[in-house]
Image (tube, rainbow, N blue to C red; front, side, top):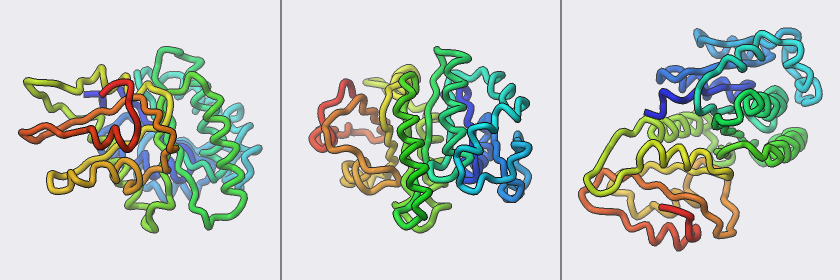
Amino acid sequence: MLKNKVTIIGLGNAGCKITKEFQNLGYDTLLANGSIQDIKVLGNAANVYHLEGYDGFGGDRSKAMNCLSDNMEFVEKLRQIKSEIIYLIFSTGGSTGSSLGTICAELLLEENEDRIVCCVPVLPTTDEPYVKHKNTFQCIKEIDNLKELSSCIFIDNNKSDDLKKINSSFVNLLDAFLTDSSYSNKNNFDSSERIEMIKDKGAMIISKLSTEKLDKLVPSLTTDNIFAPLQNDSIVGNIGVINSLASGIDVSSVIGALGKPLNV
């Protein structure tokens, strides 16, 4: 299973909450925050680092920029990670996660250029304060400049008023993708192909549908999901389908809506 090749790092309040759910599923995890109050919310979570001297950042990303140099124990823990695939989960609108997310990604890539580093940025709602959107703009620019970064999964908090439901939905989707072990006599979406999909730079979207909802396949990839809207540019890297039905699934409608991919 790909799960055994993965480490998930949660940064800041939002990132730590989501990462704790992965920890509960048995994933290798690391959590870090500068706010003692936010850390207390995590309860009995393991591998939690309090970023000493930074009890919250008050939305000021510049303060968080100096944080790693003052918390070398956490930096050393990052450097000790041996996993082939690393996911960094953080809010783009705050200060801790939005600042440390890209710095940590760059550090991890410098340590081992062959590893796969993916970001999971959590985007703010439209009605949040201006500073949240200013931070998001800066954070996404930094993500775009990380040329060695692999896929990104952009979670959009505008998709539901229930943020806990959004978080749990994401955890369920990524876990399903990383742990599936089904196989077929005809074709298989094996681990190596899934790794290639994860490595592909750009936005990644995951959908999980029951049999009676297969007619919702296209909306589940384009609009009816927890992810940021896709650019309507018909540029598609890979489409992967894991199908438990006796019959095949026609992906022509997906290709028609998204564009012709490099591979299916």
